[in-house]
Image (cartoon, rainbow, N blue to C red; front, side, top):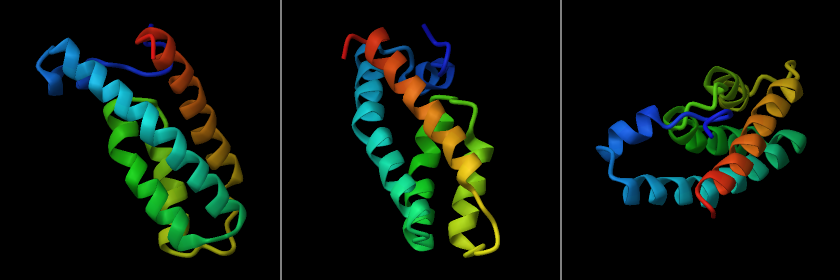
Length: 113
């Protein structure tokens, strides 16, 4: 439990209310993988605005669950925000996607979702 994510800040936010912690975990599973797919598609298609919006939306949850890739996600976000056409963010994208995939699997298992 909590290898690819951390619940310290989630517990703090939820005031250790296990039901609320479970609801936050469910919200993670409903939103973050979907946003990650959106981000991947946007980067592949060089849709800078969409990449920026998807990364920006993911930031608070990635930070809250402490996936350890917030700074990398911000690099992808800034790529989109500043339309860095000369920069290749595929390595950063893959780092974020892998972290989301691992955390998603672990959260599903840990919370029986």
